[in-house]
Amino acid sequence: MNTSGHTLRTDLVNIFHVMYQKGFIASSEGNASARLGPDRILITTRGVHKGFLRAEQLIETDLDGKAVSDERAPSSEIALHLAAYREREDIAAVIHAHPTTAIACTLADISLADGALPEVVTALGAIPTVPYVTPGTREAGEAICPFIRQFDALMLARHGSVTVGGSLQEAYSKLEMLEHAAQILFRARLLGGGRPLPEAEVTRLLRAGGHDPDRVLSQVQAGKVRLAS
Ligand SMILES: [Zn+2]
Image 1 (cartoon, rainbow, N blue to C red):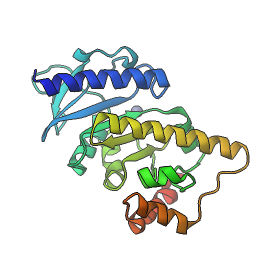
Image 2: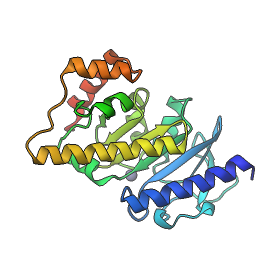
Image 3: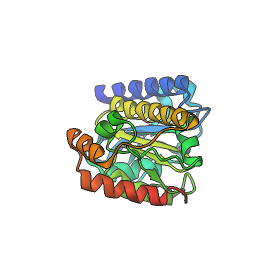
Image 4: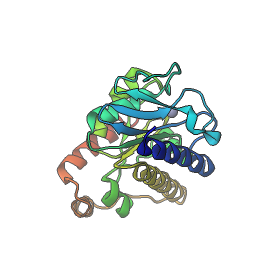
């Protein structure tokens, strides 16, 4: 194995151990991948406990999800990863997790795309919610396509999160930010608040973060409309 492949395996294992300790996944839930080359990724094998993940439980696949030189099956949710890599040549890592407060927000129809927290708007643009699709299906991958083209952090209704980045560290940081934002919004709702910022301020923050306000706001609107499905 080359040096970068070895480093990526180590980084993936370390990220899983952190995600498990932070409560972003439980048991065999969640999966993460990293790009090894233009048409190769490294991803977790199916059904392994992520809190005790070992480097040999990662496998290499092509962008059709076919394992390269390996008899084992990749994660049952590989369609999410393949869709993200196909849509975004700029990304090098994809993390799918089950962050509890953020999932609870989708169950309670609390949108994380409302623009209530300025730093989330600047960093991520918005966190839209993808309408519910049966997990582990090809359709689950197709469902994220219109959203992942525009956003680096998504919620899958009733299910979990998808975050992407130029590195594993970046994708993980976005997951942490997403769950932290959900925890703040959840507490604000309990206290009777949580109103979004005025649209003019959201627009200003989006520009400051290098996002296109028209595109983000129209997508956010679509996300809100679909939130309850
Ligand atoms: Zn999942």
